[in-house]
Image (spheres, rainbow, N blue to C red):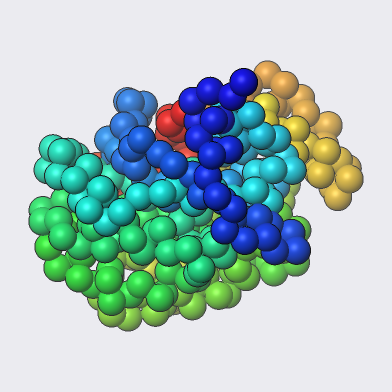
Length: 317
């Protein structure tokens, strides 16, 4: 007998079945969820979808499908759940929050994955947020579909603090396609950065996650920072990859097949802990600061007015 979120997931109707992906309705009790992790620069998270079609090999959010008693590997990429809520419900939840609290959209699954084009849950939430005044919203995405909502972003930014961040782990198309097989190409994401920057929005680029031996090093990170600056981004950042068990079960076998020379070091590192600590992280931090100075880019800084480390948050069950 299924209980809680697992029961709700099985009660929702199926919207459609594509060749690879099925989309389902997910009844919910709340849309906006509290983030209690003290290191995070926001208090609330919103994820209009569960599961993500982009299929990033390293995705840490796979374990959220386990809450619904689905498979973190096969089902996470192919069984997408769109949360059921109205604009009025979202408005009511937002009005309950302290005005100074910050909200992060897209902290687990991408708010602009392909399902959004048809189901519009992200836009529905943004329509609710457009009714707010004096609040702070940070969005993180790999989806160039975000360009669609430029007008709505402008409306929100007139009365609130809004930051739109694009995750671009590498400008190398071949590597990006291997790591993020169903995500938009890096150049398409940068085109979205440029389009949103051109209308005056505060846009940032994260070269995250940084993968040792794959996307790390000055040349690769600088290529992302250079492109971000050229496209009008105001912010730049990068964080080291972390692999919790559900993500490691997908990423490590893939790495062993595609890049066997790296597999042993990764297994040894992530057998000890999910997070990389110490000198490697310090070197990355120093390099990111240097690149910001070189290209005139600010830091993440949601503590001031922009997002940081959106991957390292506490996901709702």
